[in-house]
Structure formats: C-alpha cells, structure tokens
Image 1: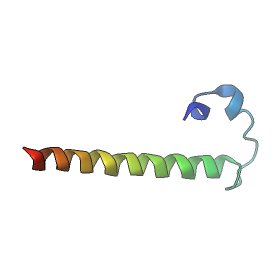
Image 2 (image 1 turned 180 degrees about the vertical axis):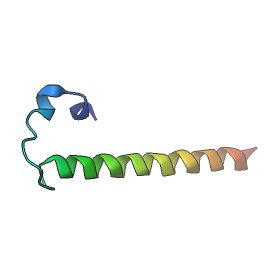
Image 3 (image 1 turned 45 degrees about the vertical axis):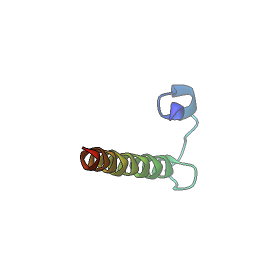
Length: 51
C-alpha cells in the first residue's frame, strides 16, 4: 500500500501493461478494495450476530 502513495515508486510505473504497469496496479488496487469491503460487511454481520 505504501507504493500507492510514494511518488518515487509510482514514477517507476512506465507502461500500461497488466503485469508490471498501470493496468496491473489498478487491477490489484481494485481487488484489494473489493476484498476489504466484503470483509467489512462480514465483520458487521458477525458483530450483529453476536449481540
């Protein structure tokens, strides 16, 4: 995640390819965000079930 806010690291992304370029970075970031949202939803459901 640090790479997403580090301008020195981001400047090393120089093409649009999926493997090592912007497309890959966007794909990975999107997958992490979706996973985080699912985990947040699951956590809420578990907390509600506990009460």
